[in-house]
Image (cartoon, rainbow, N blue to C red; front, side):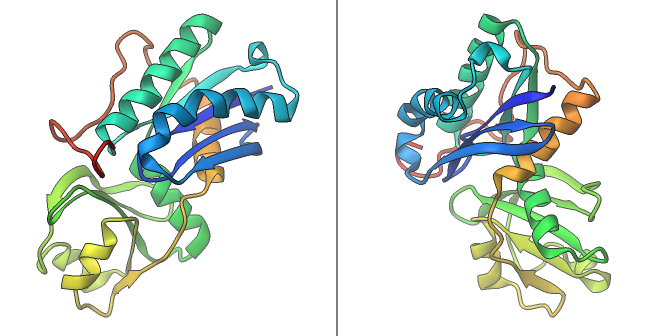
Length: 225
């Protein structure tokens, strides 16, 4: 049936959802990053109650593995692992930037452009990647120090849609007609779509050895994040 629990606590906004065959049944969000840890378990319980579903009916659990907030990633991964162990079901790990990129692709619908989600990593550093409209990697996920020369070659021949908290920094230093700064939201539908694709393809993580993708040793989005 592909009934999946999706956990995303990687960035400023946490979203917990239940989806069926890639379609959201119900989602709950939390906008206070400092409360992601205390929000997560009650949100899962609330979702199950509101959808009148038993946790035993879940077929898999998907979690954003990073990059993102150090604490948020640990909280999400630990909860996903614990539930997968207890329920004996598969775990799916998804790159946070892919979720952000797909949200931008779906909202923009510009098939000729590239998409660059960015997560603020303090000072002039961001976590970022570049994708085409098929979500194929053009530049793999990495941490990057921003200056006005980054993406210079790509921007000569491509329109690039920049999105996410890190794009605010990029907008201040980049003046290029091919750079578009999109105020696209990260939607739960995007994670549900990716988790379902991974479920169908049986792209499951090893529950015992899976770990967050930090991209650098320690990072917090905000004090307590």
